[in-house]
Length: 234
Ligand SMILES: Nc1ncnc2c1ncn2[C@@H]1O[C@H](COP(=O)(O)OP(=O)(O)OP(=O)(O)O)[C@@H](O)[C@H]1O
Ligand SMILES: [Mg+2]
Image 1 (cartoon, helix red, strand yellow):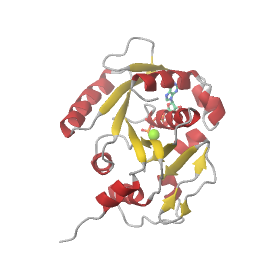
Image 2: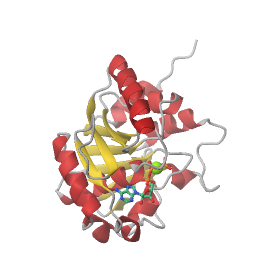
Image 3: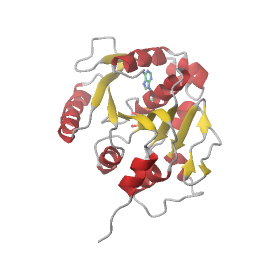
Image 4: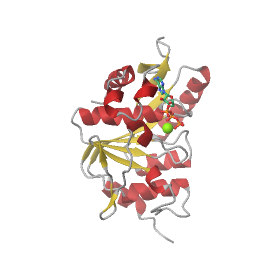
């Protein structure tokens, strides 16, 4: 029998992190990455020690939202995330470009767990996770390993999205995962059903992607800040 040492290693790695916020949504293209990245920028701007971890192997995009180019973690008893705009930033994209790949042969879930086990976050007030879409092995493993992680769920105003949301929230409740709140993104201004806050569709968001200062000035960021406060985040 082999004993998996990773749970205790990950617990040790996350010891200095006060809150882990898993930005989750159960559909693709609904704004998880812009929400996670902008939330990390907002928290850092407010003076919180903040980390951002892009765990979406299929479509890592936080580096594009932030405009973080040419970054790479430092090897120092594990991996030390580079700091961008005050945010300690780690992304699977650092390892997926056929260079410096410590993840050979591992499947996604294993690779994510490996990264959780080797990343040195140090002392943080918030670690924001951009979760892979859906409830699958990878997502469940993250919640299992990053003990105490709280979910901030993103949805959109659509009957189909709400149906998936309801079922996913029920599953998370069964698993005992705390859900901070549901944010309805790309809202049409109507009162969101089952969500704690709405973020309006912002036609200027796209042009601000890749430019943190511009991103923080968007209506999207303002709405997100309100939503985060409603969900009990800063
Ligand atoms: N409130 C909004 N107003 C305008 N555009 C938005 C809004 N929210 C998200 N978008 C746009 O929608 C697109 C998808 O957003 P994003 O990549 O964050 O979604 P995602 O849920 O992370 O997708 P994926 O499942 O592919 O990871 C992006 O181009 C983003 O700029
Ligand atoms: Mg994404």
